[in-house]
Image 1 (cartoon, rainbow, N blue to C red):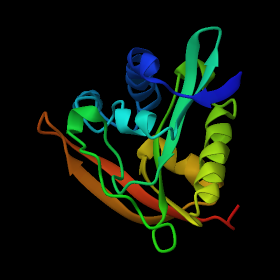
Image 2: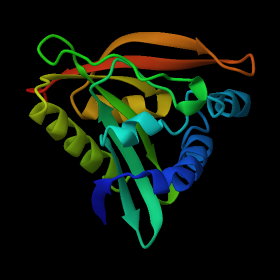
Image 3: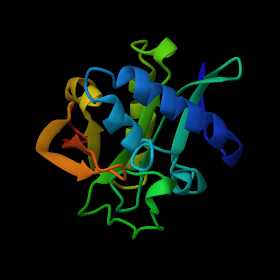
Image 4: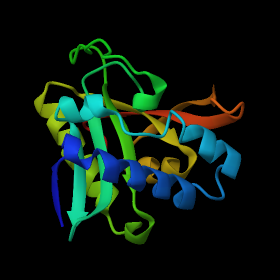
Length: 178
């Protein structure tokens, strides 16, 4: 399985991957109603990442096993359904790059794919001049990011389109951290 840049052709398969990942790997962390509300906006394909060439997939025999990216833009999270406009560019000398939209197909969970994608994203962000990385983690993602050297900043709650609320954790890492 190789890491490659995502393309617009991947968008339908990415949508399916995100839905399956959120529903299965998020079970036990979020209620069904919270997950379905998040899939209406905050969990979804962000095509700006694809256009910026900062979103990656790992594919095996035509199946997307995992996806994730980074951004030099200010948006912290959210897909096209949230109406994310092209957000302003970050200043690498003073602002952290954003780690964005990591999802793993449940059949490929706990095989190191997210770790591989994270290494690619942090490496590419570092090449672009960033020395810190920030993300908004889903609750199932928090343990993973802690093992990758990220530190919790704060817990956040967001309103969802279906009236539910969902919790996330803002996290940060310096490029010198494990």
